Image 1 (tube, rainbow, N blue to C red):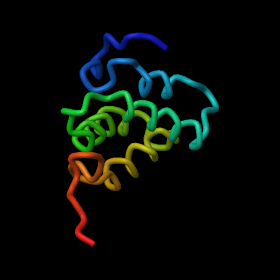
Image 2 (image 1 turned 30 degrees about the vertical axis):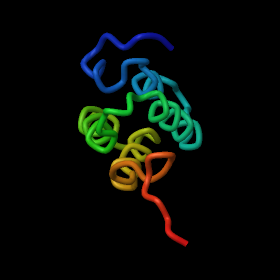
Image 3 (image 1 turned 180 degrees about the vertical axis):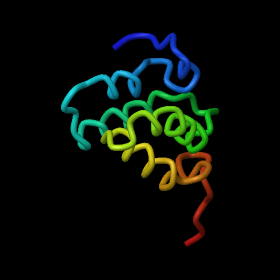
Image 4 (image 1 turned 60 degrees about the vertical axis):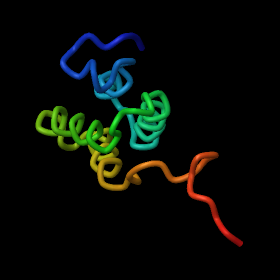
Length: 94
């Protein structure tokens, strides 16, 4: 997989999602792995929900039954909003 120079380059610069749509016989589990890799590689300042929905809008019409489309549908609706943990996360008082 290489650099994405197509219409989704800003959303998928490593071309992970675009390449997943090109793989014949790819299954949902593989698409979940690709999605996870894509999400982990994204810049922290990206709005992942908006990016996921934009990718879905781009691919859904041409590939409504593709397993990556299903993963994007689920990912766009199930992703948490904002930061939830880590060193700068909310402090718990015991």
